[in-house]
Length: 455
Image (cartoon, rainbow, N blue to C red; front, side, top):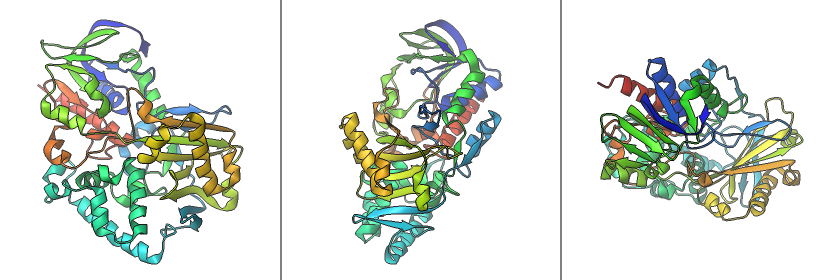
């Protein structure tokens, strides 16, 4: 990896962004014999994955972290790079915080009354049935696409779930998956996303679901080791400010200098694509697409303790609440249990409100959540860290972008469609595991094949 100016280098393909999408594209193109350069604005690789090391050497993820069944491309790449994975701690009872009380539960009850479980079971059956009818490659072509894309996940929940407790539970699920409010999300996008990841059940489960396993050394290791293989093709601290298609070869430049390439792959978060000046300008439709793809708002919060004391109480570390801002927690302790780590999320409106607090106030809010679930001992961690992804200049939110009403049916076909010799990658462009690390890898491999097959 190189840091510093780069002047007038000529390559076959320039890739903007050194997250999993851009690095996967670079790997596939390099293996096909194409010369590449990967231009990364930040001083690190990994995009929306980021490791943090506590003072005792414990590594945690303050960005994307989990891997689960059917995420085959992520598993395969990690194995190729020699990165092992291990099960997320999932033993013991879970907690539901409701009406000021803690309810312990195990299995599929979620601590809810039988009548609410029955109602949610019917709602989930309807959701999964609708989701299965949405074509992954072309959601806008679904039989009921116009109708589904004209309403939000919130309006669908209001029409199909009668109990306030059932509605609140589904809201927490939507916020946990998207880090956004149900009012912001097109029902068509909600259904596509569930189909993309398998089902609502698969997205929300730990064992047997999307949160099943973690990587030894943290998920950013996948990007770090991949970048090591690519060597000097990676250029850090090189934000791309302009892409010109005016001549036979494209010009990609910034304060650091410029490169020339036959083709360009843009593999960055949709929220920051408009910061690049394109010449000629991007089509008005594409500009509107990115304006209508906001990222979620999430602050990921972690506290380290001397030991995972909640396990002594027979608890898994997984807790949820429809009222406390720290709505979801997990046990994020190292595999050997040498210390205890709790992770929680401030998402959607909770995240936006918490971002206005100072660091001490936000820490107190988070630790109050941990203490509400696991007792006063949780209020006294050895170390604490949180990561507000909206404050990341070159990312501006997490976990991924979501589409509001009307976007899929009016603009969705543009997501993967090249504009001239500019191609698009990123987790948001993947039909399978959209918004996840696995989807990012799939998008990079897809765009590399697209370029290889181009005349």
